[in-house]
Image (cartoon, rainbow, N blue to C red; front, side, top):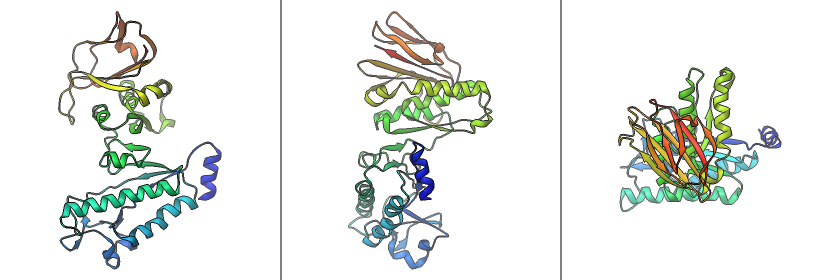
Length: 323
C-alpha cells in the first residue's frame, strides 16, 4: 500500500482513504461483548443502531489510544494525505455518563472533535473531509477541523442546487463538496443541471465517462472549463438568492438564481424546478461584461440588468461577469 501511495504522489495526486472510525460494526472483533465497556451506553445497555452498529466512547483513554494506533499511525505509515470521515449511523439524543444524557453526549462529541484535532496536529498536511451521513456535522467547531465538508447525501436527486444554495448561509462554499453523479442516459439538459449545481461549491464528479458520447463529454468538459474560472468568487464572494423558488426543499418548484459577488466578479447560477417562473431580471453594475458562460443562452445581459429567461423545468445556466 505504501508503494501505491508513493506512486500516486509521484503522479501529482494525494492518496486518500475512507474511515468510519467512530463506530464498530457487526462482524468485527471489536463489536463483540468482550469490548462492550469501551462503547457508549443508554440506560445501561450498549447503544446500537439496527443491532449491527455500536459507538466507541471517546471519553475513554483506551478508546483514544486504540484509535490512535489504528487511524493516525496507519495514515502516517502508509503516507495518506486525505481522509474522509463518515458516520453512517444515528447516535440519538442522549447517552449515559454525566448529570444528564445530553451533557454526556456533549462530552463524548467534544472528545471526538479533540481526536480530529489530534490528527491535524500529528499530520499537519492531512486533508480532512468532514462527512457524517452527508451533512450531519455541519456546525462550526467540526467544520473548523476539516478542509472540506460533505454538504448532503443528496447526490443524484433534483434537490441538490436548492440544498447547496441554502448552505451558503451556514458554511463557506469553498468547503462545500457538491457531487454531480452523471449517467450515460442523462440528457444534455440533465447533465447541465447536475454540473451547474457544483458551481455553488467544490465540484465533485462521479460517472462512467468511458460510456459517454462525444456530445455528452463536451457538456462535461465545458462545465469543468467554466468551473476553473470560479476560484476567487467561490472563495471570496458573498451570496444572494433570487427568483421565486418554493419553500418545499424535497419537491422544489419555481426558479432559483444564486448570485455570488466580489468587487471584481459576479457569478450567477440559475436552476429551474417544476413550474419555473416567467423571465425576471437581476440588477448588475452597468459596466459588467460576460467573462464566461455555461449554457448561457438562458441569460441575457443588457442595460445594467441580467435577464433570466423562462426556463424549461430542470434546466440550468450560469454566467461569470466582470464588474
